[in-house]
Amino acid sequence: MELELVRTYYTEGTNGRIFLRRPGTAAGEVDDRLMMYSIELPWKDNRAGVSCIPEGRYELAKRWSLKFRRHLQVMDVAQRKYILIHPANDALHELKGCIAPVCFITGAGKGIHSRVALDTLTSLVYGAFDRHDQVFINIKSKPYEFD
Figure 1 (cartoon, rainbow, N blue to C red):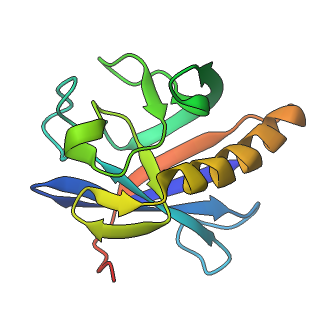
Figure 2 (cartoon, rainbow, N blue to C red):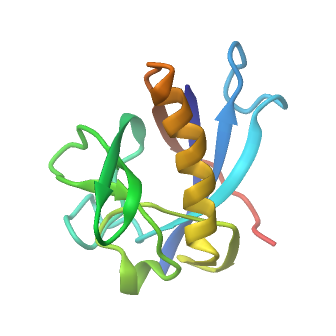
């Protein structure tokens, strides 16, 4: 399974759109399905704890903790450890380099209904894991205007 996170960078945070790539489609084709939005820290040269991670293609893995319950880990991020996809609604106050799915963007690095978005995402991705599929997220940038 392939997910695609298309980012727009702002000084106060990074906003994104997470798409489900349909098999056999090239990036950006109409068959890609918008799943949800995302928020992250601003880009600050991949510095741990203050920056979003570099663009690239990463494998995802299951992860569970008492704090976040069922969530995801982004594997093999250069110079970083424990990059997670977990709930948060304000990147600057709740994230340390991780990605938070949200239902709606409310500002740069801010969104709402993150737990709902994460539950939707993990249901989809854990289903792929149950079928023994690998899951990847391709992170790239493209300017978007968010409503």
